[in-house]
Image (cartoon, rainbow, N blue to C red; front, side, top):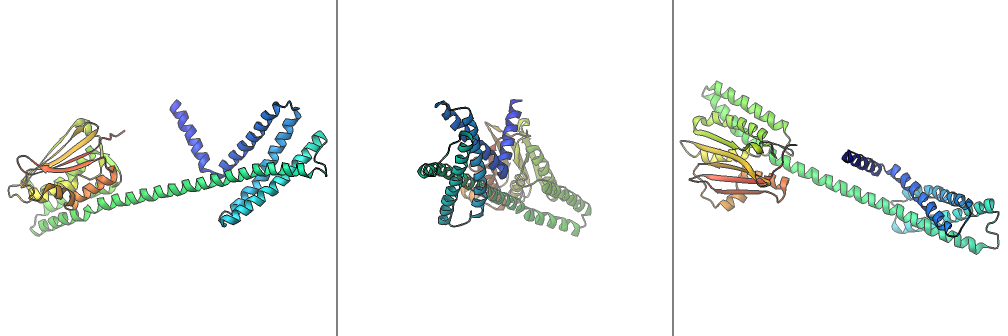
Length: 365
């Protein structure tokens, strides 16, 4: 209940900040009410009559009314040069202060039956200067709040631009793999049709259709449960098994407590494709790919290993300058997790290559 109350309060406050016009009027009423209250509390120390509260309210109301035109004037000259802004602010504040002093004089005359007589111009001038400082402070607050709001708008636009660029980068990285995968699959289907293996070609096309549907239904910038990622991976492996038949063996070992962990959509497929291309396809008798996932402290540890011929190049250079699949996966992980991830390649025992990925463990709520 307390959380809901806080959320409602924050929601109303955010709505107030977003509505600039309503925010101005709230500040205007609160500011001049505070002005009257502070002066009234000060008057109690001098044992002023209760009627003085009415004079203070009328004075605050006059200040309230006189500052409204200033707002519209400042909005009109907002884009003017700094020197013109300074001159207009000073002149407008002084004129408004002089009018306010006149209203004060009339109020005193009507209530106390005394005011500024013609020979007391000096007192009228001092009253005008005092009110000039008040209106100058109001003008400074107005410009300060407006500039702060503009700064927040620019910051919000910069964050939105960064977010859009980040999303575009992730989409580019994810969709970069599809043409490569489609080329291999369609080429295999074409070969099956040429050798009259129409049934296998049809099965392969159906699996490809399901895989592409999954790819379209899941945005590259979003994360999905590991269980769904494995379902998509099995669709891809079904396609590859049509090509390799018994030469391709796959073992999946995933702990139950990480099946609902969130992972980038289709980030395992390029790694499996890499293993098939450089491990399974290179060995006449085929090979095995093992996919495992488990909890590692507060992280999710995923490994993809094969028993292929391994790699003759230094693994450090392969990790940073590998093919499209490896480089693409590293860039996606970096874009999503920053420095809070690891991507390592090691030799698999007794032979082959092993890829280990560690990312923060995020469970589906």
